[in-house]
Structures are given as structure tokens and as C-alpha cells.
Length: 254
Ligand code: AMP
View 1 (tube, helix red, strand yellow):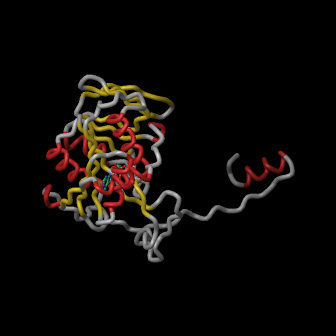
View 2 (cartoon, rainbow, N blue to C red; view 1 turned 180 degrees about the vertical axis):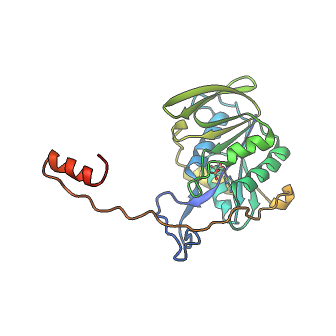
View 3 (cartoon, rainbow, N blue to C red; view 1 turned 60 degrees about the vertical axis):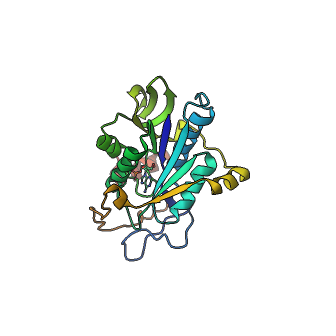
């Protein structure tokens, strides 16, 4: 079984987002970029399918291929995936914002060429919070999808996936080939060891362009304005329940 894992390069989740003064977007200059945390979970799950662990038998997956669509520096994101244990990478070089629909179209091209049995994506990229790529890719390929997975059990030609849904968990069977998107509780990704980081440097990365898959990445959406959240007003301490009720009435809550 071959597993394809799309990984996105995003602003490191520990950093505070700064909006550009003209409101045209987020300022990324000189900031640390990292693999999207949900993509890291996706790589970890795919590697466990290969090596065993997390309920998967060793050898359930034979090959794990990571793919990233982004600038030259997205190579680092791929190296990160390779250090966790992916076997090879594909960089589809594209500058500027590539919207989820264009990403999904490129991934369809990659899937047509690579013929994976399973594609595991993050449930969302923490920069655009679109949570759209996996769903669009499933539609383009005509494959079943199991989104927001907190558990994946591989079976014969199928996967049993537990999904995090509002108010609980839902377990579904999907036939392979299929799309899975990862939720936070699926696994805890390992820290890549130094020897594995060194090994990752030698693993192959194929470089492609969107045009190789016949995809035009010109944006279709126009960002009108990007703004920081309103500053939180300072709180106040009340001396009694009666005063609290008075304040809540003042605020129109009661
Ligand atoms: P989104 O729909 O943008 O929230 O992203 C959901 C998931 O789609 C991510 O966690 C990745 O697995 C995949 N994805 C989105 N954009 C890219 C990209 N530029 N390169 C590779 N994978 C991506």
C-alpha cells in the first residue's frame, strides 16, 4: 500500500501572527515557518502504517510519499516529513498564495501519477483555517473521505475510521483508495532524531510545477481586509452576587 501525505509550510504555531499595517495580509517576513501541525500528525500516522505502531501492523504501508506545494523553502517542510520517516518527497514549486482548490487540483494530478491507496491530509492548515483541501480532493478524485479522524484501522481494501464530530465520535468504514484528514487526537508525532534528520537529507525530492499537472494557480478569491482580533477589554472584580447581577443587566446579558 502506498500512502501520500500532503504537507503545508505555515507560520510556526508558537509565533504570534502580525497583520501587515495596510491590512493586505499577514506579515511573514523573517519569521520561523514550520510543518503544519495537522500535517505532522498525518505523516506520523502514515509512517506508523509502514513501521508498525498505533495499532498498525508493520508493513501495512510499503511507501510513504510526502508532497508540498509552495516556495523553494517548502523543501524544508518535506525534509521534516522525511525525518519523521516518509520515503521520498515531491515539491510542486509555486510562489504566493495557492488556494485550497488549486492545491486540491494539483494533488489530484499527483494522485493520478502516483496512484496511492490512501491520502492522509491535515484537517486544516493553521494559516488559512480553510479545512477544505481534503474534501475538495475527495470530490475531484471521486474517492470516499473520512474527515477529522481520531483513529484509523486498516482492513482488507478498507479503513475503519473514527471521526470527531459535534458531541461525540462516529465510526465509519471507507473503501480504499480513500481520503483521510487528521484530527488532533489521532496520534502524538515523534521528535525526529538527529540520525533520522541526517538520513532525511539523502532522501530524494522530485521538483515539479503546477503546469506539469495542468493547473493554473491564479487566485480566485480576493482578500478584502485582514485585521487583528479586537483587543480584550480589561475585566472588573465585583464584591457581591447582587453587584454581578446588576452588571449583567447593564450589559444586557440578563
Ligand atoms: P486547508 O484546506 O488549507 O485547511 O488544508 C488542509 C490540508 O490540506 C493541510 O493540512 C495539508 O495536508 C493539505 N494542504 C493544504 N495546502 C497545502 C499545500 N500548499 N501543500 C501541501 N498540502 C497542502
